[in-house]
Length: 256
Length: 364
Image: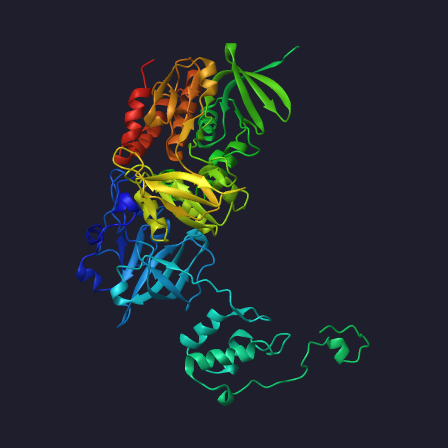
């Protein structure tokens, strides 16, 4: 219960749900504001006046769902971060949730993050479709998340998965989680692809540290034996050399 | 020893939201104002408030607190009738209405015709075993440390108190990269606006109402805290202890109005728990029982900064009016400010404030 643990009840949520026929037509705002507090910026935020004017700033916002087109311009204006836009028509399997986000680093478009429910529990993976963070929004970004359709009314926050502490490529600072993401989510299967995406093998060690480790991950996740895996081409120089040394410029303090 | 006393029309003590608005309103009415603040910069507690404010759009709602401080400070600094003294602490209110001021190691005395005391409030603390261990702070202090100085007090924090400050600071500590182990609140319900509570909760912070801190522990600094549940009478229930590994404990257990100068001035005080403790009795214009001495903001009763700004404006307006300034626009301006203040307080969350004010506001 909100006043006791900060979590709105299913009944609280039901009361804030836009009409089903409106939800079926596309993106629409959901105002998760449950308490009369002196606050009215949302009523001035909508270019279509879909959030109705208040007589008293202590009123709870009311929405004309027919006027709302789900643009989400109101989201970053709410001091309580209580406005969301839900689009159940986004695709066959997925719904879109637009939510306010005030943490750094911002997720990248295309990144898979954890979708969190109103209790802060991870409920599903969520794909970042768009990150809107203009000057005017003054550091309250709006993140568009694609989530499984049955999670549209659950996901209200996100967690950027930590980078992890297991380093695979020391030269280019790439972690195990990033390699796993490439293989599991992006469908990458070869060392060559990983080299081009993450520069693994292109640093000072020229792949001595990372390539065997990455090969093992590919084997672990895809079953490809290392001997059937194409190894990137070894090109000179195999150790870092100063261009001046290579050009015969006379400097002999080349560092390995 | 010879002491020189300067004369002034209106002195405003404290350059937070109430003091800034008091100075601006009085100056705009035509009075000359001396604004004193003990910090090196104006803005009071606004300068660390990185969250968007509630309130009315027409009065800066949805703006972040520190941006409001910047805007008000600019307006005050550019007004020719306001003389700003920063680093200036008013250390005493003497007979005949003389203020003693310390500034950069030197002392001067000021005799204003009107004084507006906008000194704000102080954080309260809590008595529990080992509460003197390094790592235990006031939540407001931590907010300053993190948002003004960019310093994290630790890695994992227990927040004691789920009022607006406790919940907002918890959120800002998450933003700064700390982990918030829990928020505990002795009352059976969350005091903060529910939208604040909902946003820290969905970020994964558990909120335990009817819980308090039993003790802190650690050798040289905080290594953990034990919390426990309270029964319906507020008594701890043995066996409900939870041990939290934290290196920081923030106390957000209320504020007390800073009324020392008003007490020295001889203002009649009343103990009003709804307003945070001892507050001066005053009339609708924020004038205390000592003629010419006004109070505004948290010093008059702990409330939101948006209300403090309106109170400051009312006090400044009346102080100037009483000196003969702004006679023409007075009624209209007064009505406009009062309407704003009324709107901020008229809802269900203003009920406690209204109850408190009914005990503190008198006819003079």
